[in-house]
Image (cartoon, rainbow, N blue to C red):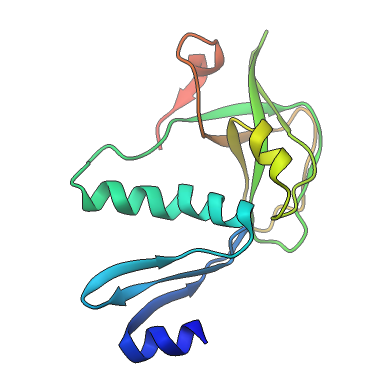
Length: 158
């Protein structure tokens, strides 16, 4: 029903994205203005807002530096990726003796808020990668961070 209303009153430029969580995402124009439709599951909505909504709002407000910091961190636990889509795993990044470490914060279902509350980053499992093993390195987009925590010695720019 939402698609029908949006098409009747505006236009839909994007309906789904190849990511987990957050596949059902809509972007288009309504009344001459951009709109972003977020998924219904709470974690999927949060992740989609962080990846699409926040950058969109900041760009519309004229900000040029809207990206959050990212780090490469070594996994301390395995991460599975069923479905082959890019997976944004709620994770905890910490300073380790050999650089940043990262581990999932628990069950990763799109309705599970506890893993989100415990997370300070989104560990990115690329398309087509089925599993990351302990010791592998992965890119992590930070949700919140503290300078001087030891996590950013190997910081990368996005």
